[in-house]
Image (cartoon, rainbow, N blue to C red; front, side, top):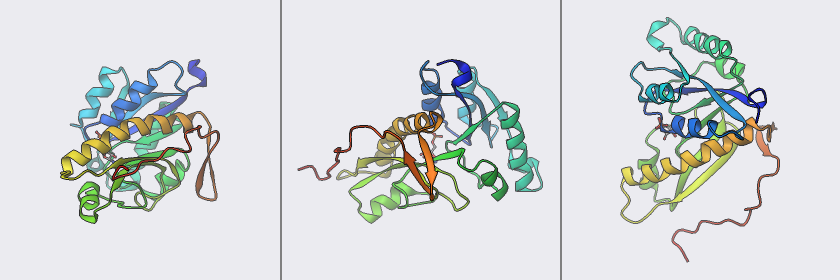
Length: 220
Ligand code: GRF
């Protein structure tokens, strides 16, 4: 796909950046409809910054403490993203609340990955809460971002089983592996223009032929 046809993507991070890595790998494929052109971190020591640098992607650090107001910090992020020509923004482990102005500016052009099957378990400690609730299926969600935390039209979800004896770490690792598959898949759909938000639902054109897929836990 020609570079002009690929959507320019900015990724917001605060830490490890393993989802960023999955997006960078997808973006390096020639037929992927998006390329990562900028990584913005809220933290100067985020591991993800080194991943971006290794991939030859520009980085910016925009720490909240450099600004008096959250709105000013977010305006600096928008300025950096727009300078880089960004059309779509992916949050990938970005651990700071966004202002209403930022969310409105990027409405339907801002997606996030969250480690639960939303609307279950918004917020933090999702794996511990899934274990405490005794759910048999857990997973992750990619969604358009709205002002209320971890809400917004759902683009895609991946489910994993919760297994007997699971620890929080074991379950987190299983979900994270699912995130690394789901997020590039959803970015492909959004960047490829196959997702439309209608009445606050994400409608997917040609969603694929796997409609009979089931995960049963316990297995039959
Ligand atoms: C992921 O579990 C993501 O869903 C959550 O924060 C974690 C970030 O991990 N929002 P990484 O920085 O992508 O490795």
